[in-house]
Image 1 (cartoon, helix red, strand yellow):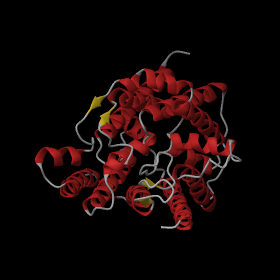
Image 2 (cartoon, helix red, strand yellow; image 1 turned 30 degrees about the vertical axis):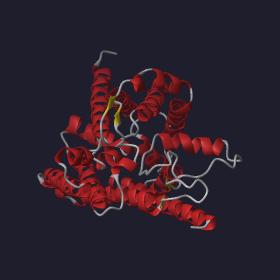
Image 3 (cartoon, one colour; image 1 turned 90 degrees about the vertical axis):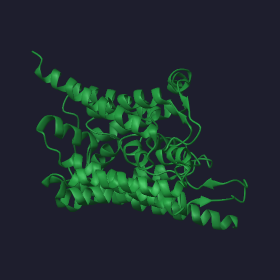
Image 4 (cartoon, helix red, strand yellow; image 1 turned 90 degrees about the horizontal axis):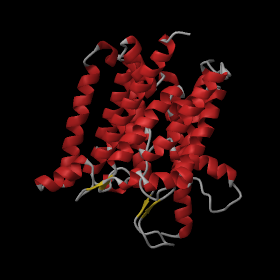
Amino acid sequence: MQELDIDALHTTVLWCAFALAVLFGAVAQHTRFCTMGAIADVMTMGDWTRMRMWVLAMAVAVVGFNSMVGVGWVQAADSLYSGPRLAWLSLILGGSMFGFGMVLASGCGSRNLVRLGAGSLKSLVVLVVLGLSAFATLKGITAVLRVRSVDKVAIELPHSQDLPSLLSAGLGLPLHTVAWVLGLVIGIALLAWVLRRPEGRSAEVWVGGVGIGAVIVAMWWVSGRLGHVVEHPQTLQETFLATNSHRMEALSLVAPVGYALDWLLFFSDVSKLLTIGIVSVLGIVVGSALVALATRVFRWEAFSSTEDMANHLVGAALMGVGGVMALGCTVGQGLSGVSTLSLGSLLALAGIVAGAVAALHYEAWRLDRPA
């Protein structure tokens, strides 16, 4: 493959990722897809509609990804989520910080990108702080603290930490067969739970769940199949084009916000290249804005008070630090990571949910306390 072909393929990968992110933003804006909102709906109103939408997206992502593993298109070991090192403390603690922060900040990274597209200046501030704290945790002062503390606590597994790899090694069965069967079984179980109640059969749930889940699967294909180069002509090594990690990536929206700020601030530096994560950040905002303008729900929104701003700033910082520690957010770990059936993703997701529940109890306490 000639270098010109690599450049063209790199551009194609970026445009495909951008288009998928636009679709994600449009679907999320139209259906009000939001993990924090789903948890809050259950706790405050007993409404499981958006929770079933999120679980349906998860089911589609699990079945789609593991079906691609089954046909040999991708493998979980090529992703960030399935290495043999299980940093359980960082995943759980980071997930909990992220979950608590997303409640204070009125939504996770993806939700704030969607709200920004609909005119929320609050979300713009949240995303800037999230991006700065995320980048600091990747390469700055909080990165030093992270590496010297929680990152040291880990379990070394003999194989990749995704369930198909672990079961394949334990049972002596082909990985592609185990991945296909396990993905299908788990996906059907999740789908059965979604369909168990009437709200799980509504058109909005299916548009949001299937739409978001399909975007995750398609993004895995773009990065892991279309952008996979067995031997790069310059390095002579296997690589995945247009990713910050040089590994296979799907949607994740904490570190990419930090990388997007870095790209903007050092735009004249020719070493700063666009990646799937960076164009996805822009694509989600564009997709949301198109739907918000078309449906006439676009409106400017600002902070209502100093306390409101303070809560959002603290929440954004917690999401930035926690999201990097946990290797992702409600989309990065809750959908992309979980689709690989990684043990670490399941731990991070549990931490996110626990943190969000704790934050909602804290918010209720604040509202109920005497003036």
